[in-house]
Length: 500
Ligand SMILES: Cc1cc2nc3c(=O)[nH]c(=O)nc-3n(C[C@H](O)[C@H](O)[C@H](O)COP(=O)(O)OP(=O)(O)OC[C@H]3O[C@@H](n4cnc5c(N)ncnc54)[C@H](O)[C@@H]3O)c2cc1C
Image 1 (cartoon, rainbow, N blue to C red):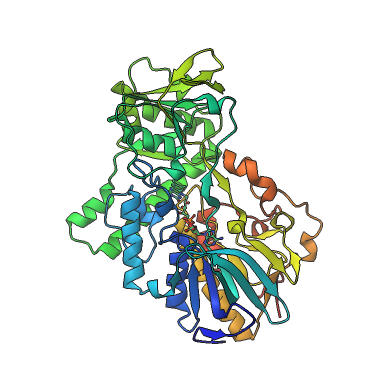
Image 2 (image 1 turned 180 degrees about the vertical axis):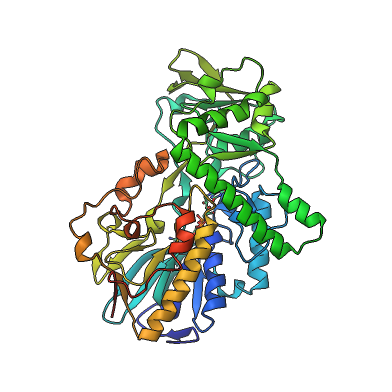
């Protein structure tokens, strides 16, 4: 195995070779680079990203108030203590990532403005050829690698999802999707309607409410929220008695994960009780007599979609102060002045914010080819939501939805490094996941069970996603609490691992 990045000439243009190629310099790609460097110091690697800087999600999104909805004790890496308030702004997350990159000299391995378009595997020489284009100059780039670590996230960074509505062209105001928020956009004194009720809507509304004339959240159906103070009592107490930050990080993570496990279990074992509890948490934050049934009682059971944490209940404070309101209705069409609702009401607006989510991108919209045959991921079966039948030497970091995404970045970081060392020890150059005899007759099912996790963006794109079998080895269970023990214990010589 090469220990240095060795450039070698093929045809035009010149291809550089690395042991491992990481796609994406978001929180997953930077975490992958850290683990690889720490655990496999002899491996050469490069990180490629289409954007002009690191951060992924936290660089792309620039809408007012942009912040995490997970606590940073668990959204942060296990190896780098988080010392700020639990819910962090994009700026704070980028600054944390910057420290990780600088402290570990990861920057020398990252190439920005490299958009990958094609990845082709050859079993003849057991390498991936990765082709792309520089987004600044348009020049083609080519790399070869033995292992492909896909950290490209799960949605298209170029454009958010906007449903088609009748009459959009008639609207005389402005329409902005939060994913492509114009820098320094002035919304002062505007009448704003935000379409959507997820974490993004719950973030932009309190951030904009003070400055615009009025802001309305227009939702088809309600979402669950957990209000709470943006602080962690345990961490603050430990800090007061001067415990080391490494310990505080570890202990606080454990406590948060323990509590989240109880909430997750209760959501599946006593969903109706949990539903009641969540709704009762927001009641005191809303004006007397507020129609909670209509505006804040979701139709689905808790935790089938992400529950947004609302720091200091700020979205509810805006409603109580009369600066923000909620309308639960269906859009009939856009009009010159705003939005005509099915109930007959017309919502007037100068600005409409379409907080309607994103488009799933299966493996970064990259064209995958294995031994000259195009790969349709919808025809593959996933091994634990990370590898895929018929696609050798490749792993996708798809995190958790009910727990912080990054928990899986650390778990899979350990796993990939263990796997690479195992392959070296065996002298294997290729690993392919293959169904066992006992698996072959099982029906191939959609990526995610509807009763496990069912947000609209996933439902819209389920037909494009890899498939699963009804067995923990062949699905992304989204269960961090099981996987934290299962993944480190995976037998790398089990029957489904085919080495050559
Ligand atoms: C607004 C918002 C808030 C969120 N908040 C939370 C939260 O609080 N907690 C949580 O757990 N999750 C949250 N999520 C989910 C979040 O996306 C993940 O937690 C996490 O940031 C994903 O990190 P990632 O590195 O895997 O992917 P991303 O952040 O999506 O980064 C992927 C990177 O890969 C690059 N890339 C993609 N395709 C290509 C290609 N073909 N060529 C080159 N480069 C490519 C992109 O440019 C990007 O930089 C949030 C998502 C959004 C949109």
